[in-house]
Amino acid sequence: MSKEGKASLLLVDDDPDLLRLLSIRLKANGYAVTAVESGQRALASISHSRPELVLTDLRMDGMDGMALFQEIQASYPGLPVIILTAHGSIPEAVTAVNRGVFGYLTKPYDADELLAQIERALTLHGGALRSGGGQVWREDLVTRSSLMEDLLAKAQRVAAGDASILIQGESGTGKELLARAIHRASPRANHAFVAINCGAIPETLLESELFGHTKGSFTGAIADQRGLFVAADKGTLFLDEIGDMPLALQVKLLRVIETREVRPIGATRAIPFDVRIISATHRDLAREKETGGFREDLYYRLNVVTLRLPSLAERPEDIPMLADHFLEKLAPRYGREKSAFAPEALELLVKAKWPGNVRQLYNVVEQSIALCPTQIIPQAFVEQAIQVEMHEMTSFEDARKRFERDYLTRILKLTKGSVTQAAKLARRNRTEFYKLLQRHGIEAALFKPDVK
Image 1 (cartoon, rainbow, N blue to C red):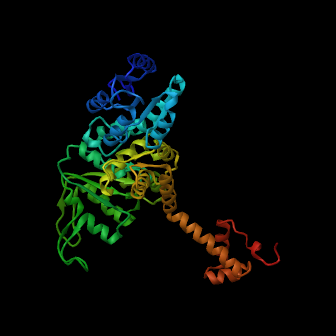
Image 2 (tube, rainbow, N blue to C red; image 1 turned 120 degrees about the horizontal axis):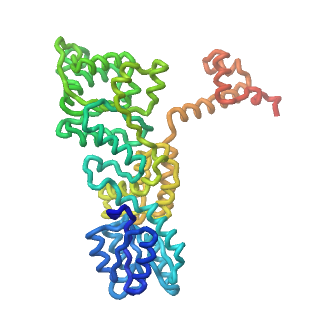
Image 3 (cartoon, helix red, strand yellow; image 1 turned 120 degrees about the vertical axis):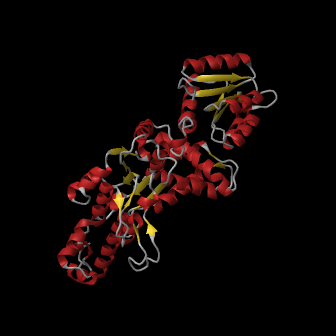
């Protein structure tokens, strides 16, 4: 994007009159335009200042439009190219599109169609160049979403202080990435960033991990171990999925935060520490504290500042640039120098539902590049990867409901609709079994032999 905030276009045509007229029209529609008269000059211009879209004539002396596209594809695979062509060159233009060119227009072109195609290309591709203005602290958070930009501006402001931060957001939105970015932007950046998932470790082990233990303090404690509070001293401690922490441990955590010192299990002396605490959860902690699932006093200790990460569905404009970013990151792993999505594949990514958010998009991109043998990834491979990922994304709760429904149906078929016999086979009392049937909307009478 240009300094004035306009989308930047590069026009390439060896006809100076057409180049001038097209430049005037596009500038009048709010674009920042650079115009050059050859493919070689276009490549020099891109290396100096990368545009967000290239619009080139197909037939030019020297390096033609197709040769220019191939050079761009090799060095800048996420950069969209639209080709202008005379009517007689349409077959060549179609071939170019099949090879990854975003689109083509025939001369004389329709002005509205040209503007529409440019906007579509910028919507699908253009944001990849707007990812943060070289701010290293937030380089892993790829975005052009106004929601995300507002969030990151707030995150940068609170990073300068030392207040505890609670990051809320659905699973897969990138809560740890945001926590790491805040750490990098903070005065503690030169010290440790220590992360722990409170929901992935059993309660007894979690206490030991957080606070440490002494040798012999419990079975298996074969040596002294300093806890993560001490390991993160002068740095940042990230408590992921804090909403899953058991209530008994919440009490101990509150005391540690209030006293700013921790006593390892089995120790007689407390150790002071200095950490900035960032916690995260996908749960609604405000509701949890009202129902007793989370301690109110701990909630207010951790929730001095709240940052809410939007879901991917709330920031669809980020999908193309995230997909390009993941491709660039993954390409070396799969022996590719460069890869890019075909326009139809990218459009499919934009239109897809993403219940698993950015993490799910990453998985789809990785499956696509792993399975596709060509440099340009077509729609079919993306479609297949999305279907596989959506199948695997079934939540535990959904899987349990499906199992219960199937189980109840099979057992009622076996007992021919007899709830009493079915409850006995399921080893549940009759009342409980009826509640299960009601929960799944199953009528036992439908399984009786006399019901047609």
